[in-house]
Structure formats: structure tokens, C-alpha cells
Length: 500
Image (cartoon, rainbow, N blue to C red):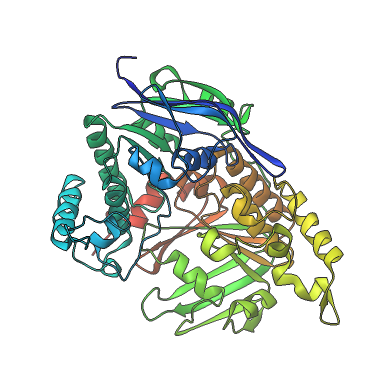
């Protein structure tokens, strides 16, 4: 290896009550190279990032920086050593300016100890220009869109003199164009000699951007090497300890009686004239590009937002869905795209999250029955093969894939007629994706009607009986059979070849 090794972890372990998150793991990062950290949810990737950035301290092993052992008792110590992280969900402050967000906690000071606003603005502008952002650092953050906010998060991470940059699922909320721009930024960082740790579940990204790989499984180091010397199949087998069938589950696609009909659903700003029917045992896919209005419509169908007009029939009966409680009572449940903010209460234990919508089942005369709560939670978490130390474990301490299982278990416990899955495999690893797909097929086989919103074409093609394509808030196509191809999906979603 010609490039110098900047950072190394040797024999690092981390224990939590009832859980060994990391056991004797190894990691090496080199100047001017991207190392992909690969592993299923629960493999220990997030724990390692928190150790690198000083949030956690290891229980064993050592961290070497330029060959010398170092300790990071706080995040400030890690930042001072030149280690910075760009997280999937970086906390920013809408009421502060871009510059204030970038330098929050380490703003330049005048000789009197006051914040040097002019210097902060100048340095912020320089950092933004370096990463290809042209907007004014004096703008309030709430005036920016999601993509520009992500650039602010990147600029904030680079506002310290970083030598090691950790990117944790950095493309999760970005469009295709924005992802391409992020790749260009990574190339710039490599050219500057920075060592980059890149964490992603997307294999196309890993093979596009990484020079090296390191694989973890169940908190243990499995292997490392050059990307040029490995293929996707080998990486998957290292991740999960077994070959994973890339083909979606085979199932008999027999739609039953109509369970849901939506007619003339409109919203003042998000969508218009939504009409479709859904049958028992059917998986209906919704596809579209960013801004197509799919999630906004699903939230209205679940009673989160209010449509301006339209009707919903469930089993032939008109139902007015003015709130999520009314939707659940009618038999419609919604697994949101943002499971952390909208799907769970992260501080509560698993069993309370699962039973929260079913308190009428787990209580008697106004008093909760703890044994009944555990029984109900155990029934559905075991069905989903939830991996946790106990049902008392806080949901916030679970991996992303297991958090998703908690959300699904919560709604299945209500015995719904229709389940809406909004990006059900977003941010989860390939092993967990296969488990979710298999479970979706089982639900359909049992007669549940499934609506699946997905931006992944293979998932849409592999799981859907029919696909509705949306563009700019309207349904533009309904496809099935031979008409359901990647080309037709993209053409309809993008409006390619259609009359203006």
C-alpha cells in the first residue's frame, strides 16, 4: 500500500448490557482512499463510528493515529485530532444562518473573545465554494431545500481541519443529480489526501466510489481488501455468512375481492385526481421521482393531512379519514419512510412501541396489563424475527432494520386490512431487505392488501402485482404484466417522450 495509513483500530471491543456490539474488530484507513464499511444492520457499524468520533469509548483494543495510540474521551477530542463525520440525519438549526450552523460550537473569535462574524462568514463562504455550493452563508437555514441543507452539514463537518472523514449513508436523502455531485466532492477530498470511511447499503455506490472494503458481521471483523479484487456476491456472502438469493420471493399472485377504492382524491398543493382500487392479497406498487407526491398522498390516506375532496371506500363502505386514529379504526395503517421521527418513540422500549396503538387490547377497565403487553409484543416481534436483547430494550438502541420491524409489528398487531409501506427497505442492509420482502409476500398470501411506495426499480418490479406511476402529484400510468419494465417506469415517471 503506497498511501500512508492515517488511522487504525486494532482489537477494538464494545459491550453494552446484554449486547456485545463490537468484538476484537480491525479497521485501517489510508490517505487519499475511500474505505467502504460494509455489514448488515446490527453488524456494529454505527457503534464503530461513535467510537471514532469520541461519543463512545472502547472497552478494549486501541486506536492509532499516524501510528501513535490516541484516546478520544469526548467528541471535541476526536474533532481536534481531525476526525469528522457526516451523518445521514445531521442535526441542524433552521433559525440560524448557514455560517452559524457551520461553525456552531467552534466559531472564530476576536481578541476580546467575541464571535468574529466577518471571519465566520468569510471562512464559511470559502468552505461552501470548495464543495461546489454557491449560496450565501448569511441565509437562514429554513430558506434552503433538503439538498442544500445536506451541503451545509458537509461544510460543517469540513469546517474543522479534517484528516479523516466518515460518511454515514450520505446519499439517503439525495436525488440522482445530488448524489453525482457528492461523488465529485469525495473525489476532491481524496485529492486533498483525506482518508474517507464510507458507509452505505447501496452496492452500486460502494463499487463506484470505494478503493477498499472492510466487512463486519455480528460485531466482528470478517475481512478487508481492495474493491478491484472482489465482486458483489462475495461481499454479500461475507456480510451475511451465507449466499443471499437476489431474486425476489416467488409467490402466487392471485388478487381477491376489492378492499379499498380511492376516487377523486385532491389536495390543494400536493396531488390531484387520485383514483385506484386495491384488492386483498395484492401488492400495489407506487413509483415516481422525488417530488411526485407519493408520500404526500399516503399521508392523506392515513389521515395525517386533509384532502380538499375525494372519497375512500373500504369493503364498499364510504369512510371519512380525518385522523390516523380513524384510518386505523377503518383498517388502514401506514409505515412511514422516516421510521425514526414518525414511526417509533425511540426512548420507549420495544414492547410499549408495539402495543401503543392496541391499548384497548392490552388494558382492562382503564388499567394496562403488563403481561398482555409483553404477550402481544412477543407474538409479532417473533413473527418478524426481531433481533434485540429483550423487549425492554429502547427502540433507539436498535439497528435501522430492527427499528423497521418494530414499526411493522406495531401496525400488524392492530389486524389491519390495508398496510402502506413507504420505502420499506430504505437504509437497511441486503439481508434485512430479503427478510422484509419475504414477509411482504407472506402478508399478501394471507390476504392483506399491501401498498408499497418505493424508489428502487428492482424492488418495484420484483414485488408488485401492479404499479401506479405518479408525476407532479398525478397518476400518469398504471402498469402490469408485459408493460411493467424499467424503461416504461422511467419514461412515465420522467415524462419522456410524452406530449407537453
